[in-house]
Length: 221
Image 1 (cartoon, rainbow, N blue to C red):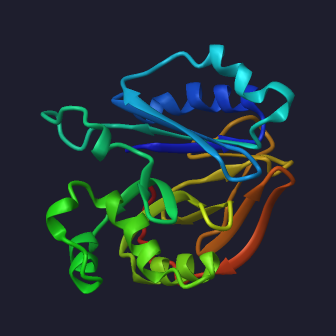
Image 2 (image 1 turned 30 degrees about the vertical axis):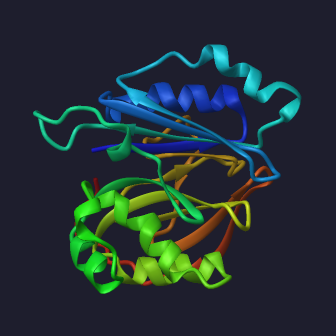
């Protein structure tokens, strides 16, 4: 079980990180994005205190703060940066909560070396990059149509400099202003994002930009 979360305001991002530590304290990963597309990525073992990073919100240099908290996939697993979120491949950076059932099948179908895939989440940015032919929304739609399992993700496209949210089976909530999101409910004004919908996440809030066929089972994670 993991958690994904994000906000356009750093103080809210910090609160959401504290909240989502309930979903996993094995590792954490953060990505801060400027409107021009430049990124600051940090990931490490365990939990951390990010209060000192308020400087990243100074004069609003960064427009989006995205995060992931991770539980180990097994009790014996050691921390490795290459198997921790977010995953960066080609034009896409992705953080994922959930369980995928067909990641190795997709690797073979898309001629991706299965030996480089150590955890299921790694396939998502690889699949997106393979499907990307100029439209990030269409690549996301086609990737989601091919994925089997349950998932909620934030996805950043380096070329378009845009961030997207998707979910199928996993929880993902937003606030009334639609400028923050989290795997865990927060505050008293949030609502759950719709399954099978692609949302674009900007400083102005969430906008629906597409749909996909949701392979939603009868439970959530």
